[in-house]
Image (cartoon, rainbow, N blue to C red; front, side):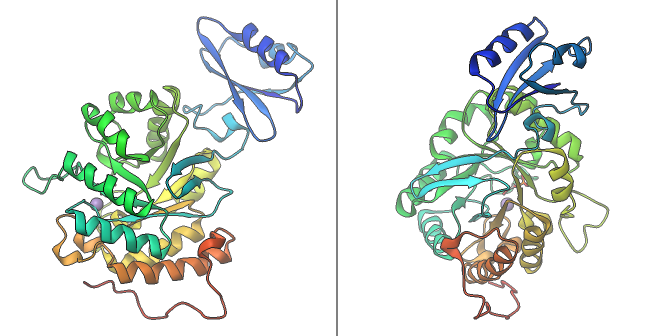
Length: 365
Ligand code: PEP
Ligand code: MN
């Protein structure tokens, strides 16, 4: 249930209402939006009568029930106002949100060595990426596949951050590594395979670092939002959702099925920023540019693209990784579409009088 306060309600009055609503089964939460303050009530609200609540104060605009199972993640909980996730990086604050330019995150699947991660970081930065991705701890289907270099790779990410000023996105798998990962990561990624690792999600609620929550391979949109709810309910409001493809019956021509319809659907359900990962979504570099551009048109707030200096030699996910040149070309094409939908940073805008290369982006190594 939410209590929407009228604009300019005195703070003391809001405090008074919060105190009045406080009970054993309900903890009122003050949510300060750009235009309005909302008091969110989560817990056993079945016995509350909205009409009675309305009478608590003349400053109450309206009282509404949130009938979705996810509460804090619901659009209603912020009265339709999109959440902005701000990520401080050495190059400045990067903001993810519906009213901001599209943020591009790029880099290899795994951090392999210093030279490759620093070179990739430099090149994706020059192409317009704002954050560098790279796995130190890798969730692999086979225990015999490369598992990531672990702690030493975190050190290499720190180095790439220092050299380029790019913020770092890297995956956390084991709660035991939380402190180490949080020290280097500007955004902590929770991978598809851990989307429903509820004890891990609860621990992420206790920190303030932004969390990138990838959609589980067979997760419904509601499962996914309930997982986000775990993090929000535990106290961390900085969650970004990432569509990375779901498993369907057709695996012959694509690795996963990128569910772009999730983007407009999520818009009707949640205030959280939405990222799309066409690399895992398709599993093939040749389809990544088309789906990246489609994601912009679908309304994504951010893109995550796997890029490798030599994809044929990559230790993981080479077939879906763009080359450095391929990524640069894609960024030019994305700029045109991003500008057309009014979502591209002025800093990286390109003149529409000289269209980007029309060459097909095969991204072959
Ligand atoms: C990754 O980003 O490299 C990754 C393993 O992603 P996902 O969890 O979506 O498979
Ligand atoms: Mn990968």
